[in-house]
Length: 265
Ligand SMILES: Nc1ncnc2c1ncn2[C@@H]1O[C@H](COP(=O)(O)OP(=O)(O)OP(=O)(O)O)[C@@H](O)[C@H]1O
Ligand SMILES: [Mg+2]
Image (tube, rainbow, N blue to C red; front, side, top):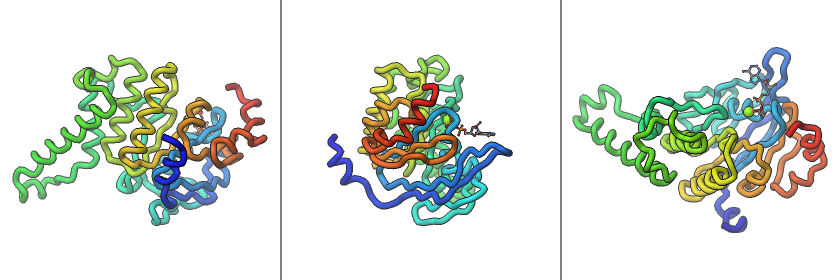
């Protein structure tokens, strides 16, 4: 799809972070970071190891609380975001280190994402007989659709721990998609993958963005991938923002070039 067509999909500001600072004891993980994410865009976060990329995602989804700054999500301002509130607001994420249940099947792992959305409480079930069952059936159907979408039908019943790494990453994406997120946070979804697996994952990320309209914040080290699929890129180095813009602008930014030349990868 041409970038012109993609640009038309991008809407107003969905997330705005203002002057966010986060420290762990003496370690400044993030210093005065401001950035925005627009509805339906694919926003990449890049930077050398230890730059603060994962910490930034953890602030967005309320796992870490910034000591300074504020977050506005879908027009609601938060001094403090909790992980529960973030989930309620439609934020889902995948992890740099896989957090799947290795002994459970692909299907059941993806169902765990779905279960976070189940609405039938005990009372609701008592008053609306059969609704829990209907809900379970609807959830199964939703999960089967995700499995089709991610082309992992042949592995539905296989324990996740037995699958190759690239497929496990795809299951992790499926688990996050099962939450029907408005915003998806992907922490190095292609780390450790070979070229073919990276191409597959890139295609799925673009398809999720196109077909479900999901806003995506993506941490990725592979510059080729970042330049190919992202609308805009934020660059972090030692917890500070050193670049922000379209992929081509960021690539030519002298500070960014310097950070990467000085880094080990
Ligand atoms: N829970 C924590 N406790 C203490 N220090 C932390 C914690 N999380 C992150 N840090 C520190 O904050 C800094 C930023 O780490 P972060 O994991 O956000 O970097 P990153 O850009 O994701 O790196 P990588 O590319 O290696 O994944 C590092 O110095 C790290 O050691
Ligand atoms: Mg990280």
